[in-house]
Amino acid sequence: MILITIIKESFRLAIHELSNNKLRSFLSLTGITIGILCIISVLSAVDSLETNVRNTINRMGSDVLYVEKWPWSFGGEYPWWKYLNRPEANYNDFKAIKQYSEKAERVAIQAVMANKTIRYKNNYVEGVMLAGVTADYAAIYDLNLHAGRYFSRKEDESGDHVVVLGYDIAEGLFRDPEHAPGHRVKALNSKLQATGVIEKEGQGLMGPGFDQIALVPYAFMQKFINENSRVFGQRIIVQAKEGVELPALKAELRKILRRVRKLSPKDEDNFAINEMSILTQGITQTFSVINLAGFFIGGFSILVGGFGIANIMFVSVKERTRIIGIKMAMGAKKIWILMEFLIESIVLSLIGGVIGLLLVYGIIQLANSMVEFTFMLSGSNVILGLSISASIGLISGIFPAMAAARMNPVEAIRK
Image 1 (cartoon, helix red, strand yellow):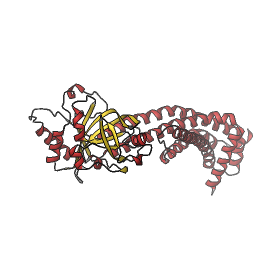
Image 2 (image 1 turned 120 degrees about the horizontal axis):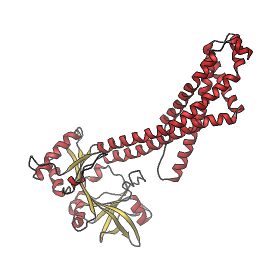
Image 3 (image 1 turned 90 degrees about the horizontal axis):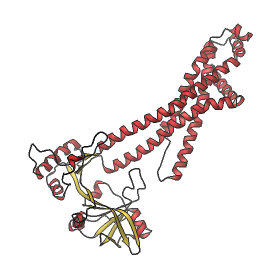
Image 4 (image 1 turned 60 degrees about the vertical axis):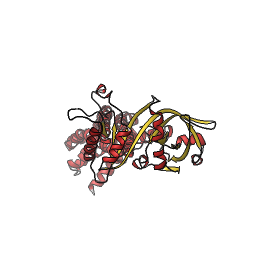
């Protein structure tokens, strides 16, 4: 009961301090507000970016391996000269994996041409990524279709002139993507029948996803691979069977590829088998550095704010010396006096923190209205901001509160 009374009284005195000494309180709380604004803004931005990146990576498959020419790497020196003359992942590799792998559930091959143009009558869309893929590609990536269907295995193997359009491409060509299936579009100087439209994903940190990609059968794309120097990044995508660990699948693929490429035991691998964990580890390291920078920047402001809170409390103790003496003379214990000023200091600091969080929320809402990307203020960051504010209030108020609690009642009343 006494504790509740002390908390109420401390809160009232904190508000009284803010209202009676507006300029002093404003200047003192500004440091806390700016510090929380810096730290929580950076953390919220990083959390939002990291969530977007991880969602994109998870969409690419946590149970998937990628056979490519180039290994993925994060940080450090990248010896590109070692990989420059490696052969691209090719159709022979794909067939060997599909035939001999016992641990793979699905296997697909992909070849991409960048910056292509797709036309329908007088409408056209530029900058399209045209991907030649095999039938299992859609199942590996769990593609959802907005309209129509994915091309069949027979169409894939025959290299039929068919295409599955990304949502933005279909919208650019037909306005209403629902109308795309069944119509013929033109790409690579060929007429292709649109069989389906991929569901819209929206803009992400790692690009537009499948919204601006057009998928054609790999057998169709093969006709242009050797003729067009703008083909890049052929890769084989291998999805593990349920219960199969990626290291086991990776070891099996390595044996198959070394055999099909006729590498001797002394030869180094002339291929890379990449997995998403490489990216997630690099992303974790990168965002850890950014978070640290946010704490470093905000820390200085909070330090200044802490000194401001301490200054307010020392002045408050001096102004209320006589009242403290009277309370002690009437039986108030030292711990009550100590808690009164500590709680008042924490309340003042929390007010600064709440203002900082409100500013962060406002900035996030403004950013969400201006860019096609979702920023968020998570509950954990709100709790962190309030915890930092309360901690600074506790640290800043401890010495003024101890000074008040140690006063001699008789001497305090005389002042």
